Length: 171
Image (tube, rainbow, N blue to C red; front, side):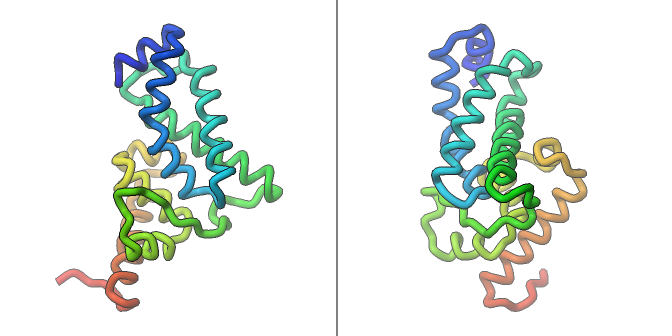
């Protein structure tokens, strides 16, 4: 992937296209954790691709491309939300399940649906996208301790939903 990024930074549109195609599923999962419908998700992804093409020269270290791209995507999602609802905060968004072919299990989808957006987004970025807490902290512009606490609370909520609403405690 790093060679594609370097080629794209040189202006190679084919390399950029291949790079974005390799990231489409990741972008879809992250955007659908924030937005209400597929049309908005598609708009956010389109805007993200365009912005990435226009501003790829600003990326200093190709290693951080996914983090940078995801940050752009999150900002595009927030822009869509602001336009639609007159500046409603992200915490007030309706819940939307994340769709991923790896997680066809109805219990998994139901469990994710029980989480509010702020916990669901952190869980998706961490467990599905594979970002670490420092990267998520940078993307969401939150303290790393907040990311860790949201992960912890999200895990507890998921555990409760899987064991029938009872409080989860480790043995």
